[in-house]
Amino acid sequence: MSQGYNASFARIYDRRWSAFARHVAPRLRAFYEEQPARDASRALLDVGCGAGHLAADFLQAGYTVTGLDLSAAMLEHARRRCAPFVESEQARFVEADAARFFVDGRYGLVVSTFDMLNHLPDLAALRGAFDSVVRVLAPGGLFIFDLNTAKGLAERWTGIGVEDSEELFMLNRGVYLPEERRAYTSITGFVRNEQGSYDRFSQTVYNTAFDVCDVLSGLREAGWPDAYAAVLDRLDTPLEEPEAAPRVFVVARLP
Image (cartoon, rainbow, N blue to C red):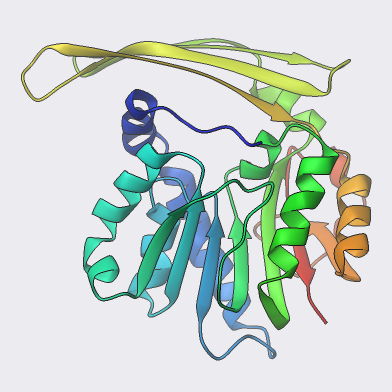
């Protein structure tokens, strides 16, 4: 099972970690729209949609969006952010586990961003996600997701960080354990509420460092013969040494 964020941390996540989704959404959309075989329905499935920031970008561009997330609290933020589109039935947000889910419809594009799939515990869970996606991806459709590599986790998920302001105090403590190929981060703190007092939040999460070769092999076994790792600014160019990059974007096309 993937990891779900609690209500107190979902509030902080929505306020503090939205920049990544806003950065990658237009780039993923532009890449998809350049593909000759893209699905005419402009239907997106966002696996691990979080607070709905990426979904909002696609909705505003005229896509229909289904967002999946394990955290009910994160889904509430997504529904509020995309409320007009939910009301018009252009968007829906569903509680589901990325490691195994069932959703109706066919999608020309499926995405999973901000190292969401790193939150799965092992290759079996990751391959469960691949099997779930392949059932709903339209012929010729794209599945794009990003992963932190072992290099990225060792560089970015270690040490102690403190953020201190009138609105927020946050302590972030991270460690990467190479023998486990897993990084852990504990995030605790206090955030100012509308009444002027402070609410405490706490969340511990992990990222699993999957070997990129194993990831690509799992995709081939699940039905994607055409899959490669790239970087965001060059999604059309396979990396020769993906493990040398701190973060990779995996692009898989269904025949």
